[in-house]
Image 1 (cartoon, rainbow, N blue to C red):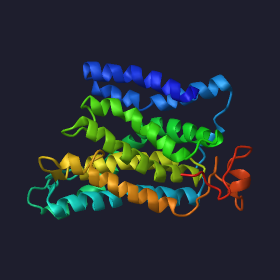
Image 2: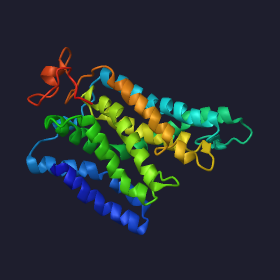
Image 3: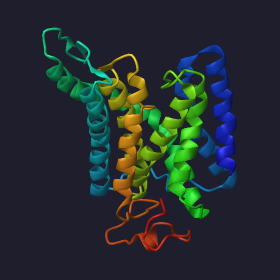
Image 4: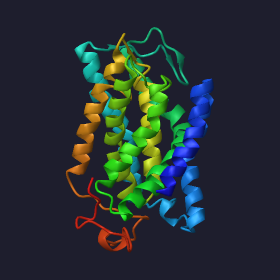
Length: 294
């Protein structure tokens, strides 16, 4: 697939510089390579941009956005909570809270609660701006093309591709790398595939790319600005974080839960009363349940 090849070429060039020179600021550029690749393919094939889709979609979209913002809190409380409770990691919220400054006299639990709110307020807009570069490419383009091509388990395939895209930086020790980089990469692949399912649901069930963008941005914000800074311990990265075993197990559970019931697949936000089978994929193939086989 041309889009995937372009992502490999464009991302590989940026990753080579990042890994070779340690220029981590270029990761911000890297995150927009999937979008750039999709734009170039759309222009070359004259596909247009309607099915990205930038339309918002009303109440259905707002509900999806609320759910995906809550998702990293729920996953974090389960995965990190188990790590804290079992002793494989230490609950240690930072004494400094965004917007409020240093709060050394406040107990850990109230500090964590304050951080849960302020981290989202501080990080969600930058998180969305960066996540948009990936989601316009991964869920706004590649996911639909996998469905159109009748690729088996298109959502899982998209998750595998998304996960592999991160692997070079993990193996280089520059991103979510634990004591054993190969183990970190393997566990991250499970995390990526597991997280792809609710993010893809957010895109396909609403017909809008914005819930997927918010899902990705909220995940990065809450995990990296709330749960990771609140966790300590010599080997905690083996258990939690984006290459942690407990995080992976929790996301597998989330993916199974989201996949239990059929959900519609819309290219663009549906009109009132529209059915997925008629308006979702247009002339493209659709499963009988109105959803792709996960």
